[in-house]
Image (cartoon, rainbow over all chains, first blue to last red; front, side, top):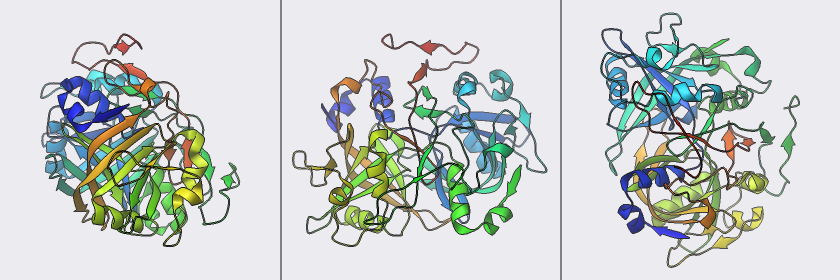
Length: 214
Length: 214
């Protein structure tokens, strides 16, 4: 079937959001932790964190200027610091709960059943239950002209991860960590183990990487 | 374990790329199709396509100004049109092969075993084997100051998808379509079926959506 942009424009709002959010494919599952100027913590789920570069290590994510993300945006702009915490499938219900529009002064950590963790002198709270935690500082806050959303870029200052996830070639086994993959606005998925392939070269058949021999 | 940004900077290049690319979580799997001014087609795998907005329908992706993506970038800038085609796990080997640095004039469609499909008057080629295909036009080409990469935003002009994937509430069942989730630079994953949850509200337990009753 074909659905045109005119069809999409005519869809009922929630139907349209569910539809268009499905179209990019699977999404990353992360909780972003931050604190306001008085030290009050905030935690919100994001499905748009993407890798921007490795040298230096940079991540990016999309921020829509609406509640409940407004607290995250304000805190990041004020403090310049935040955390990105991978969400295991086993914690999907608590993670989904952070998307509710809590009032000012309510900590999503407490309301949703996550534990704050502070590491060293980094001022933003990590999610203790997450097996892969990134300490990030704000790099760029870019306006996306097409719809007025923001694309936030962040420097990775430190990575805290479970010892058993790092493979010999630098690959972090996020499937072994049980990290969720997301779909649309509300879908949570387990994944199978990674099937990995060697760097592709023209004219040479793609070769599978066997675990332990990378 | 803790890995600092100084550790990351000291890593060997490929190790660092594998490591940092793992940290954002699962990634979307898409092939971007384009054509140059003489009609020569190009196809390349991207793991950074993200949803930007639903009204209007907008997608974004990260473009590193290096081969083999340079052809895609040049074609998109010249023609303003391209396609985004979801990658089923079953086609992972062919899709991975598109990441090789083919010479000018080589069609990755032919070299990697995909079929070009032209729909209506849209000038960019779709991947016939893909169950979810987006016709896109360039909206914004944003420079990311932190590392000189580009963030490309695109308007969704039309969606071509298999009839059996669209659910009653607008959700597209990408797990049923067998779409792959990616990890790091070279990991391909199957996924389990979606577990979905209702819109979250403060103080109300998160409720699972049962398929067929959304």
